[in-house]
Length: 102
Image (cartoon, rainbow, N blue to C red; front, top):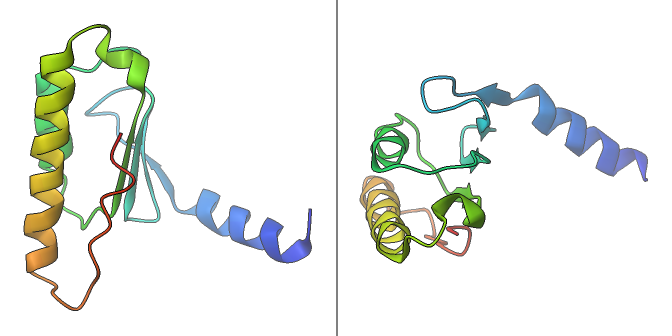
């Protein structure tokens, strides 16, 4: 691995913050990416993610955490996309990229 790539990875790891109020396997990376690796996703967890006081650009959720609950998956995607869009309206100079949700 190149030294430059190693530096970038180390820089990100230094900015990794565990979100215990959501779950044991949920993290904020660099203040703009949320990674939720919980085994189960609930509406309560989605609400907590939606209330995080930061401008998220990417939200990564574990697909298998939804089991077969398609309604929860669809509603979660819609809710989190709306939250990201609303936070971006506050900063119109940024480009909205929703490719990282689910």
